[in-house]
Image (cartoon, rainbow, N blue to C red; front, side, top):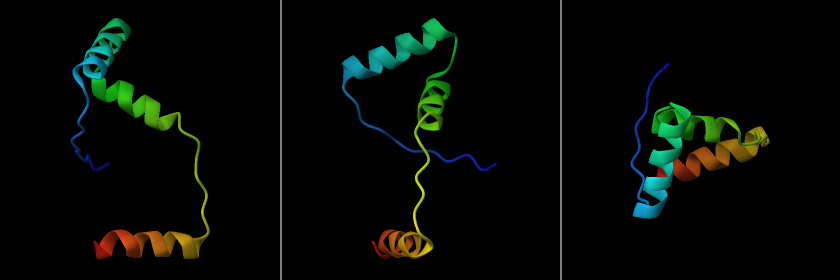
Length: 60
């Protein structure tokens, strides 16, 4: 599995909340964020819509 990185901007209050939550659960902040992402519902789109989205992102 390829690991990707991204930067996110957030205010100090949210950063502290994430840090404290992760520490209380004995997890890393990355693990907490990954679990939140995994809990999102799956989105199913038609192949043609997917192609349009891909083209939109690659043109920018």
